[in-house]
Image 1 (spheres, rainbow, N blue to C red):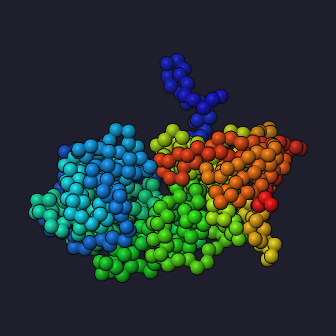
Image 2 (cartoon, rainbow, N blue to C red):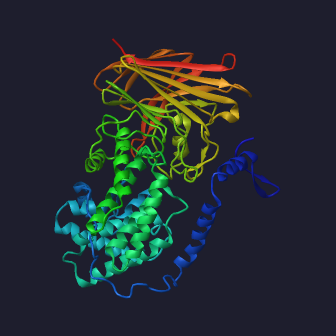
Image 3 (tube, helix red, strand yellow):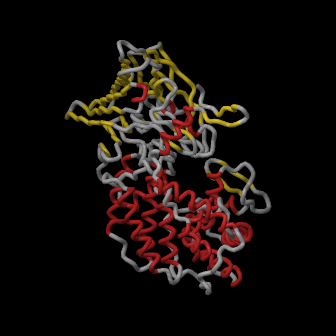
Length: 571
């Protein structure tokens, strides 16, 4: 039965597979989350009405914030110059709005609009160091207040709202310097209106990095705007609670996305600096967490400086990543394993091998989870060789394809994923048990063995073993699939090549790979047939690059399918 809606006797019904998938999804959602989402949806009707806000809590509008938030991160001068001409570039897409600002330009994705309404780009205008940029910033903010200054479910969504508050406060000193009385009063009044709205819409139902953004904005507003000391103490206490929930003992953020891990670390650095600038003493937990997260960030960086593509995100801005690590203090030693997150790093001489042997995500938030269990990425001599496919766009029709198992360097069974990805970041059936073990022998090499039960409903267990020799010139892998019941399904091992890698199939068991520096490696397989297939690679949000992947088509023998593969320098 196909997974589609069907029309029976004039009524719309869901087929049983879709109902089952929905039930497998909501079993991981707490009743509290459902109630919170329903409550927010109901309250939006009040927020849209002429009665909101029924009472203005701040009768007097201050002339300026009592503190200016610290500006830690450099802007992009080129983008700043373009913004003065109403040209904005986000998530790999540039839109020229013409003579006037457009707050919902045609064809812009929701993610693009969030970036526009977050106002992080104020740093780009400020980086130009000229008066015209400051004038442009004031004019754009004034227009935003005129057009968007009252509640709208997208423009005032808690995520862009939180970002906008922190960025307006960060650049408030620059914006207010030399501003006339009318603009100053308009800016401060709307800033306070947004600050009053934020506590009502904090994303407890979402958790994760969204909630950290909300609490960051709450801390900023409570320290920068008058008469909010109690709000600061409450927000700081809630932040400490979330740190203990969200940051694992090995320093990894619990959503298990290197990209969002970096975002949370950046937010904590901002919060730490804001508290100090306001004359307060940051909680010791915040500083300790920054130190632990910095080590985990270094763990996920390839030799080229970018991040590994596990779960949602992209390779990141390398200059920003460098800046984050410099402010944290560079990690002297990168561990071979993040045991609580389930990630493993084999790094011997020439090769850097990053491996995912962890659960998909915390059950309360799977929006950025991919079906990438036992997938890996590999660099050789600082050049990316095997890469996971990335994310693309959150609102794109290809999103779930990019989240699927076949878009990662691991093994798929039939047309099914190791975790059931669907909907707007939803996750149904998923691996429940993952076992992994790292073994290292001095002078010989280092290896890992891991297994997962994501295909248990098919009666299949997947075990992957990988070994790297001591000097990082020889990598060997074995994928073992055991059929314990039901029927034999097609098995495919996926190995996605970075677009810069040239390849040639020698025969159905060997391919020759040529790196940009002309190093030639041999990729050999045993236990199946080697094929090449077109693939897609998204190193950055909104950017899709055509590439290729090598695929091992396996065969079952007496209830087992074993795929052996290896990579070594060709002499």
